[in-house]
Length: 266
Image (cartoon, rainbow, N blue to C red):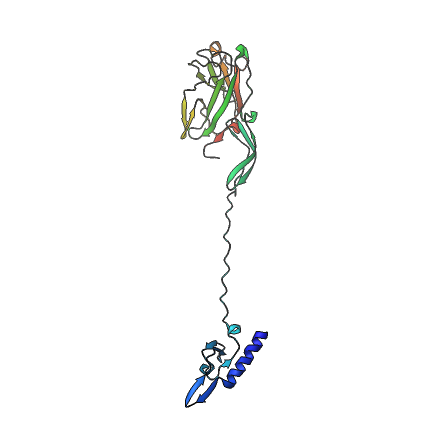
């Protein structure tokens, strides 16, 4: 406020003495002088004598500065919900169970993980006749259409204290599907702690599974829910009629609804 008052006094002095006539020529104080035109525009002139007629001398052009353009308010980008329509249901990967899932950035994250879960077809090794015992890991169970079938890949380890008899068999049994059964014959020497068919490499939909064997449930009309068992039998019981849970060893069991997935679904 004090500065404005001083400026006004200086302007008054300019008005009184800024322009004089002497010796036929104009003399003017070299002081920048702001002035406002009749239409409201303020201009800073080099001297008081340069101020045109009709302009009003003011202390400063600052109050008369044109309004700054108002920037347009940018609309925030609309966020994309990556988890829309994604349901993180309980699932199995092999014999590992995943539960209590939630979606994060489009991916399912599970807070519960249980390896070797009975919900996913795992059973504890159970020595039976002949003290045979096994560990079975379900690498894959998938329904594919066509040809409308379930495909299983199991990696099985001999936990017995001796080698498995040559020509023993492992059967995939599906009693509720017209007594369906499919067998694989052991034709190698798999001693204690050896993986059966460990030399195998099974290719499935672009994936390679080393050290496993494949079984199938064929001739299905849909991905129906089916109970199944994987049973080991020594040569004397290696037929469909003789190889049972009572005469052999149940290596694994489960239900296709929880152990298997449908091709193309996460």
